[in-house]
Length: 121
Image 1 (cartoon, rainbow, N blue to C red):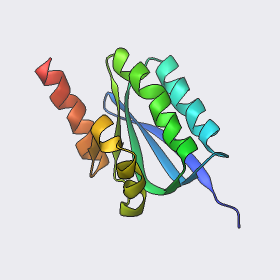
Image 2 (cartoon, one colour):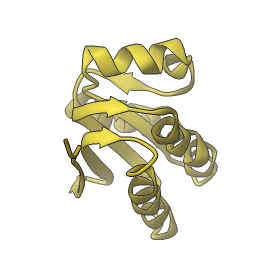
Image 3 (cartoon, one colour):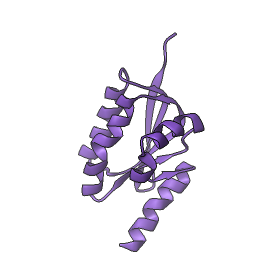
Image 4 (cartoon, rainbow, N blue to C red):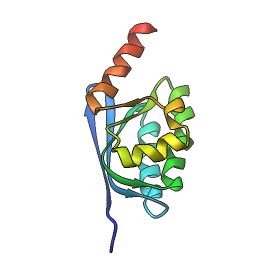
């Protein structure tokens, strides 16, 4: 059985939303890594990763988030996670991601968190 993976990017106001779908594992992590790296190179450091259709994540996939979080924050942005399914959230939770990442129930709520951060500055 082939496990699919796809990525779509779109703007949501000043925030870039990266929607990931399917299985994020050692085979697909490089594709995700390339997309995040390109967003940061292009100066887009306010990122929301939409996990609505993410069915599975491995340590390789989790590593991509860890690779870029400091770079995004140093550039004045962040990587926020949104709409994680309960079975995938368990993996994030066990590894302590909720303490490191802003995780919101929806893309809209994650995007709004950037507005709140900007108002506090």
